[in-house]
Picture 1 (cartoon, rainbow, N blue to C red):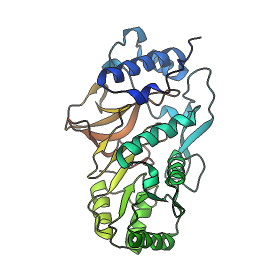
Picture 2: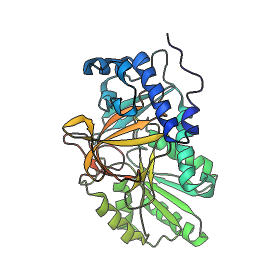
Picture 3: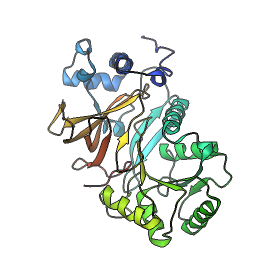
Picture 4: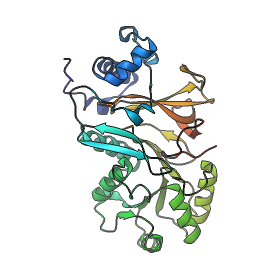
Length: 331
């Protein structure tokens, strides 16, 4: 049996250039081709010889739907935690077996701090109904870790206590306290309708889907409603999903940027092995080099558009896919 290199969990966080990214990606590809039964079967079904994969562009992306009915995990590993997603009906649609939860914590904390600084600089309020009402949400886990690290006694999670949350937001304004309000779109819209107020010291970050609670709307309309109700210049966003251990962050205008160990590539919708040029709409493929144990190469059901500077937009979902994930509204 091929051993798993002991330094793999550190390598994503020391990537400093394109060569280092490509080197780790190819190392992980060959590891998964040899040790991941699900990914190996996928390559066999494609008729792909792992020995012929020598460049990043040659790597096939595992369809994200595989996580719905198969345990995607390297041989010899057992999960310490299993993250789950849910669809609009609340049924489980995907399971991500994670043997090293600390790697997930390190991933989101490192990327969060690179954009927003240490959580201790914030009061963090999480408005995450639907996610808080079930077990196994990776988003709730992330929010709770950030809340704990904030060290603010008023940081916390909320279900439907909009009146309490509105009171706390007014208090944060009065204290001029830098505050992060992390919320799902349908709950943020409820708050905007019931308690519109100017929020000069609050950063609003939307994440997750409508979960069937409201009609799906385009992101531009969601952001227009929220910026108007709360008189903020922009709405921030987080792009992540159950099947990944990393996130991309948007500081406004729906443009996301990945941490150094994560990249997106757009594919043709009618040919998953052909790339889409900048500015055109395509399916989003993700390379997440923190997905060491499950699969670093995921073909999502999201539609996007990429810019030459590496940033990207998320425009919706491909036909017939579940509307259940992070930051995805139908365009």
